[in-house]
Image (cartoon, rainbow, N blue to C red; front, top):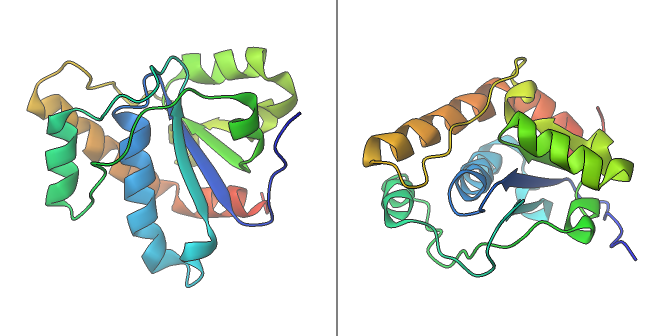
Length: 164
């Protein structure tokens, strides 16, 4: 039985392991949302991974770079994407074309909610996974996500509210 979607705006950010990209995107969007919507606290923002190992912490490099931006995700733990979690969100933003394809196959009844994060910005490109990389890879990933959130802000807001 699927968990019903609530009336509030909602976004589920999805990557592979739910340790880097989706966690960063959710944290960056939550921070941005406070300037975009006076009712920001009513939003549901979540993250998950297509192949996540349950309960893994984010890498230290990501934690420190997000802390530099005033974002503390130290209590965040990875979780695997489920049908119920996906069904409970109006918008599912993935990081790679393979994520979008896999979710469309596994959850065909929900595929109309799934978009590449870059599609919100008007193009189609993956957000590189920094897992196992050097600090520059984490910085580049965060900058890429920030740029895509900025460029796709209006479309993200509309889709998350169910007005797209």
